[in-house]
Image (cartoon, rainbow, N blue to C red):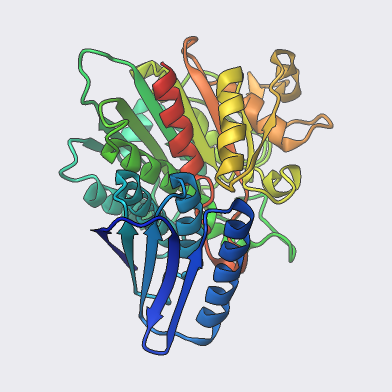
Length: 434
């Protein structure tokens, strides 16, 4: 899908919305009343959804006139509108803006476009969205953006000691071998402060030897297990192109692997030495996301000594339940980041629930045969277990950490893009508070 944007600078004090096609033209004029605005947006979206269900045309024009409503309202409207266009069904969206010029409008449109691209990429099946295909895509995306893009092959990862990542990916088909991408953007050489975004890139998750089974396993949707890596990359793309944040140093670390079943698959009970040097008893091969994230987090701490790590994943399957079907939940020990993440995610309609990480909880991942286990044998929800596990690989003491476990946002087998805007805005707030 392509989203086009143009802005006509005309003074206007009201908001109008129109969807223009030969067979449909609906205009709305909304006064600057909050309740009226919310009700009108709801009606617009419902009418638009109903229309799209019965029409499969390839081009739509959305015209929005922004007057005295604030940019947060406009952001909400645009996102709601753009979100309901199914990517493979509608090839073009043209958005025009009429009203007093606000540079934030173009930024909102551009962010929405990038989120849409992320959604489409997330929906690629495993025979199209395998690790090397993901690497090829992101090399193109970040080309000519003052970034350094490195792709570590399976052999390179072996020499580096990224054994947790390899324990997951080595069971995959030959052309689907694991890799890790590192995208560096360092415009500020005087200030070495770096923010790392790390995303889980499991291009297909069978569960490994602990294979997913039953009608509620949603194994046909496990192509979406790469959402964390894709969303991390597109969040970074937005941040390095945004005038507010483009002078900061960012690094995206994206481990990609396929969790398959073969004669090379990791067996439950195997012990693997991680990049950090810790030994891990892999009790459950379907708890694989935390394994690849652990090596990536340790790598980030050692090489970049970041002031902030944000890791993003569809990690445990408990995000829907714990967040009451909102966008997910998060862990952080920084109270300011906790407050900002909760507030920002709520305001953006991507509400995430804060969870606690008590310092004395390490015993829940105790292993009798290794330093730690990848799951808990105690009665403890796996959301807590995964966070405590990842915390063990934060080897740089001065790093703030935000761990986000996203809900599996693929209603009707379509990725929603929830979480990307929250990640972007939380990092912006963190940068501004430095």
